[in-house]
Image (tube, rainbow, N blue to C red; front, side, top):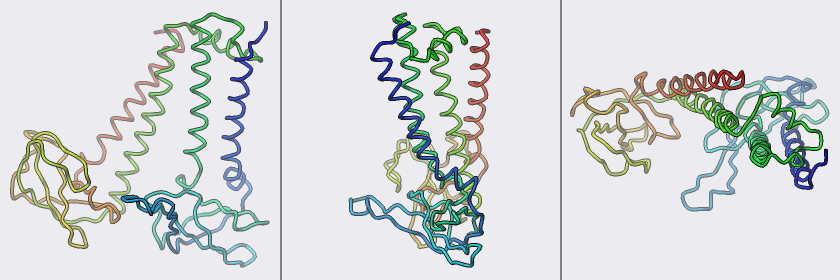
Length: 302
């Protein structure tokens, strides 16, 4: 069976993307497996000002950690991941893995410090190419579009793919990771607020329909209580309750506990369970439902 030049080109692109993903993760994984462990202390925040010159763009930051090697050498390094907010705060203790031959080659043992996002992006791109490639084979029925090792034709035969079953598998294969990311992001946000949040008292000023923009720039539509609170610096912020009337019994003059992160006071929320956990639960249940549906499709029951 011959293979077209397009299939050869796609094969090369997919292999290069897989190698790139391996390269991105290689140093971190190598340090995780073979690196020497040490206890580090966050001594500061390292700022990277590439974007700070642009109006409205804040500098991205990374934790600055100091630790002592097994030889007694004091090492100070910054993290590999830069973001708008650091994953840890000064004074926090974290585990690190370092190379004994080059102690400055250090990996912080935190999920946020592993290059999962760039590696995942590259793998996702390769995955999309493979899915589109399979779709082309199913639609055209051209055997020359198969890869040189005939792995795609074997997968098509094994999973009994056809132009009807394949779109379902394609959508589910994207929906499940999206729901998992949703669970992680929303639960991480809730955990940060519950463990690191600053509590204060807010007051309901009234109910508003189609309110103008909030202090964080977002817009809010519907009838809901408007809650005003002051952060530690005395700056006033306005937030909205998640439960719209008549589900919420809040009325003008009521006082409620508000919780916010020190670096994002404009994202404060009312300190109740329904502000934190419904979103992770929803994404989690959707991920389970999609996974069950995926297993039924693979087994040929749907």
